[in-house]
Length: 453
Image 1 (cartoon, rainbow, N blue to C red):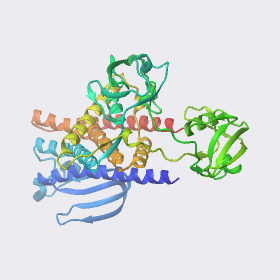
Image 2 (cartoon, rainbow, N blue to C red):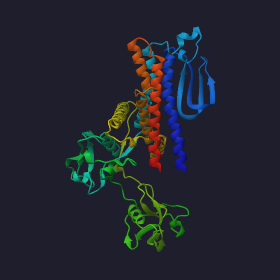
Image 3 (cartoon, helix red, strand yellow):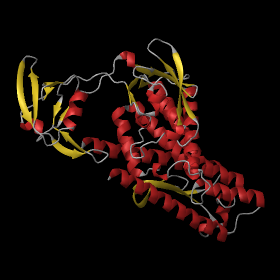
Image 4 (spheres, one colour):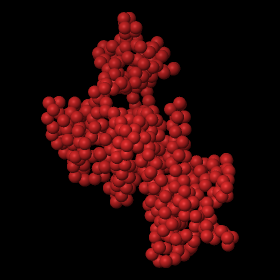
């Protein structure tokens, strides 16, 4: 429950921050080119709070934070006094109009750069990309990948952490040819593994990049010691308590907590005998009946309601990125550039049919992503905010009326033709744009609900 509350709060904060930055970009450039701003709003609907500055601009916070707007003085929206005509948006040169419109998406890219710069200054830890289990029927196994090998490069890009490995792999989603991995063996010799992309099928519901290739990262073993027991669970009913060590299940030795969970999941609604050591000296035998539930794939699995201690990564399996104030500028710039390129590439592959539209996510997916990033730490939260900000900026540049990119097209046409497009053409464009936007939002929400259910 607490994780859900944190996720919702973090989601609303992230959304309000990114929308504020976006609208502030429009606002500040409008002020710079002498366009009068009537209202600067964060959110839609009934206003909760408002105030005015000396120039007469009203600032407001509205009840629905899923958006915002900057209302400028414009003759197309009502009569304007003659002494105010020089401050109207519609009378400004097309280039100035384009600057105002472009400033919103550009602000999103700037804040993404700042967030990534801050992340690199604080330092973000990553897990060294050492391979754990490899499915024998997978393309990874066929390409020669084995346990304890280390991935040092993907498509000739050096990879120091699993995050970088996955990030480089995502560039190839929906692509053809081969994914090239440079791998270091335990004997310190390297080889190149070529994975054919035509056999790469990513689970859309989970988007498990590594799992779809048959790979699992190597993890330190977690001892089969109970760290937490859920109230009213089968484990609590039979008297299991934190600190109990599971020695065996039905007479079979247990070496790790993962092995224990794997066995319990196979024994739903069956009597299970556990040999437990309490306080490191007292052995006891107990019988428990695992309850059953559906996993993410709808498969029936067993559980008894116990958790292990948090995973602790040894220092030799961690890599920490940390830079100076100046040193963080370069990696932040290239990370922003990489995120932008990947966003554009994904959208193009969806439009060209190489990638399923089921990958589109809406507010539920974003909220879940924010919640997960918060639990991983502040640095990961900053990275996720940067990714959402980049996506928001790039999407707003699409040449669809009602989005900033659509209005840029209008102003480019005005610059070339010497006069604004007729109100009729603009209205038709906006209606078409609204149709596509509503269709896109409906699709995103449908995908969200499908994953949730």
